[in-house]
Amino acid sequence: MNPPDSAPDRFPADTPSPPYFAVIFSSLRAPGDDDRYASTAARMIELVRQQPGFLGFESVRGDGGQGITVSYWSDLASIAAWKQQAEHLLAQQSGRDVWYSQFALRVCRVEDARTFRRAVETESLRPTFADLVESRKAWIQHDLRGWCQRASRQDLLLAEAEWFDIAGKADPAKTLWAWAWSRFPDLVHGELGIDESAEVQVTLGDGRMFRGYPDARQSLGGRLVLVSRETHGPFPIDAIAGVRRVSR
Image (cartoon, rainbow, N blue to C red; front, side, top):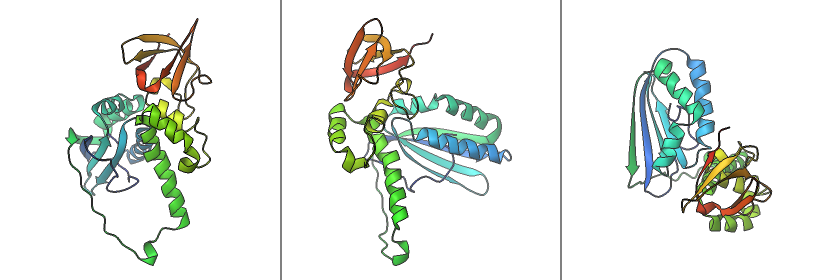
């Protein structure tokens, strides 16, 4: 299940200009266990949309159980991280044990991409206000959130200055910066942003490493502060190569 069968937000998926990467998952469903398969598929969609580097997906399944899902990613590291995500690992095991009689997984680099959509201007197809609201919500949650996970600190600061016009009344600390820091999964707690309850080890781009507890109140403007017996930082988000939670 990589990612799951379900209707994407848009078909074909909206993707940025190449290059980027595609994971092609071709499968043949085994009979039975449809309810658990469907619920797991829905959960995988929820999770994959939160993954740094995820760009979108397309998925189809025929009446005979044949299915193809193509997911798009900004880089190979993001694909590897999704493969090792805890709930996704369990879903993969269930896929091998129960849900699929066979499957094939292929990873490729997209060098060129072209799209076509026929322009249709009829009264019946014009979007309603509710359609516009849902479209904006989808754009914020998928496109804008994904951009925050990849953007430089300089661009994030520019976006913060215009955040009311971009995202409405949303608090930048709970949206823009929470999404930006989620590029380091061990640093954040769900939708709440920086997790202050767990000690982490931060590795900088120059190889230096620091340990401590993240201080969300001091970590402003895309600069991380760690506290332990002494204070470390602030470290600009662009200078951080990785964050690992320290096991106790």
